[in-house]
Image (cartoon, rainbow, N blue to C red):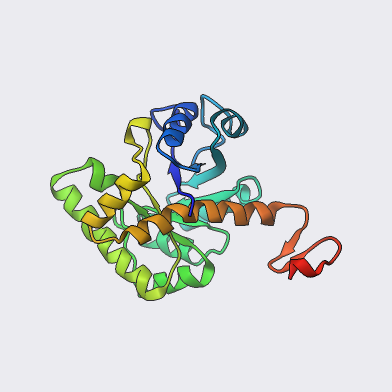
Length: 236
């Protein structure tokens, strides 16, 4: 399984996309999901693929105060980006994202006032919405904040496992200095109760998601299992 990482590049993050791509390739990542691809500076998604030998996935992370605003932005961005992420952190936004099939990933579901229960986990599983396990707070915080982040990750892990809900893993990097190699993330995951296989699966899921969505955006795709063009037995 090829590992991917999700990053936020300058100007929203601290490092340019080119610098993030260079470091990610050195660390052994196959690709980067660029959460702010329409704003990222330092290189275009296409240039990253050509110059750094690493896949770059154009994504958008939607931050909104209310579900109605988030819904409008999802509708505006869905056809323009390969991956659509909604930032959670409140019960209403978490519920909206889990119940919206047009959303690919729910980021930061346990942040702020956010929480997840069995009902939301089952809704996410039904709609194919991936929960994000962001290991960033365990890497870059301490004290009470780190304790709360660990508790949230462990609770989310149990709910995801019970509901067999899809998930992704990231380090929440906004700088090339915040990137961590896949083996380091496996070690961090082990320290907080995640098996290496779970971390690997979550890192690889970004790439699998991007590949699926790229196919769906292609001209040949009509709906799952149906494509335009001449039928061939090998397509079964």
